[in-house]
Image (tube, rainbow, N blue to C red; front, top):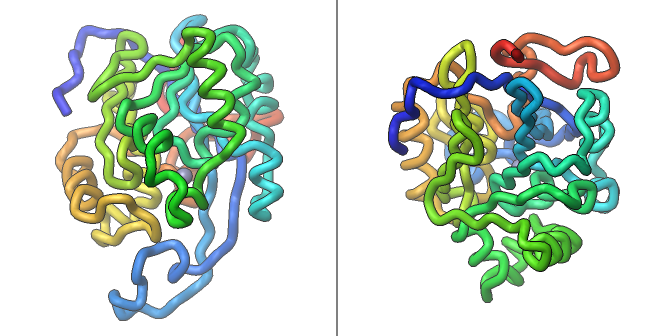
Length: 269
Ligand SMILES: [Zn+2]
């Protein structure tokens, strides 16, 4: 991951918590019994992220759809599309959308973005259109309707597939790192507080980084550990997890309709 250039635009990161789930530590972490720790209740939250700079907006992931959420018994705290409207963002305005990976909880609701360019890594597209995608261990995390939405974005010329790295805007760099899924991407954002890395599911919980544990489902175990090590070595001002239930508490709360469901990092101007 090359260092970000310092002369670039500043963005505000808005973390939006759209869902939550109560489970156990042994469900959240792979082979949890190996660590010799007692099992216990565990909560994980579901996020997507909005980047704002002046009138410009970049949307990072689109949460899960109501259909997928209900099918899996996931609680919907706020519909991601409603959350965007609460932030005065029109989903149909054509703002760029980054999909960090094609799991149902990151790629839902795509039909609400009919004019947006959709950025996703080549490895991710290749995997989900390849022969492995039907295996239950992988297919469990898919969203069939998202496949159709991607195909229609492709037909409209809105699918932006990047190989290793892409700057979707000055100061917003997306890099495919793999590990959790073959094309899992992270997003580096230049903010007034310094470099923010949206790790997405390259780091579901801060405990993965701190305790060198892995989430229950990872496509490539050695690479997942390497990515964690790489994240540890980066001098980011803030490293943002994909699902840590403590994530919102670490940042500046947003009031109004999204009170308790959103927090910001950096100035918006
Ligand atoms: Zn996820």
